[in-house]
Image (cartoon, rainbow, N blue to C red; front, side):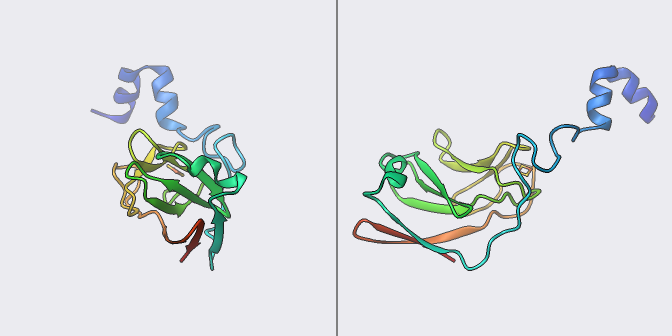
Length: 142
Ligand code: FES
């Protein structure tokens, strides 16, 4: 099937979406976040008794700090990944409690807790950070 026939067969609206997939969704500083450069030298702590850590009390909860998503997975283990998506660099990675994985809602990337992509949106691994817990203090670092 020729391109023109294909576009005609799927209709004008769909053809527009195929030809201009990023209008309104891929621009910098859009509602879908901002393209950000991956930080280097990440090394910070979170006090589990602090207000900022309140969302880490239960499995599935997560907090965003220093462009890192720190989450408590379904097993109650703390995990951390970059907030910067390995697909196109938007700062929209979050933790999805019901699937126990990291995801980015800009184009739908999903990543296992070791950073491996779990769908076909990107082949690039998500950066994962180490976590060390000493008492009530979580250290997140590279
Ligand atoms: S930037 Fe495309 S899925 Fe995250």
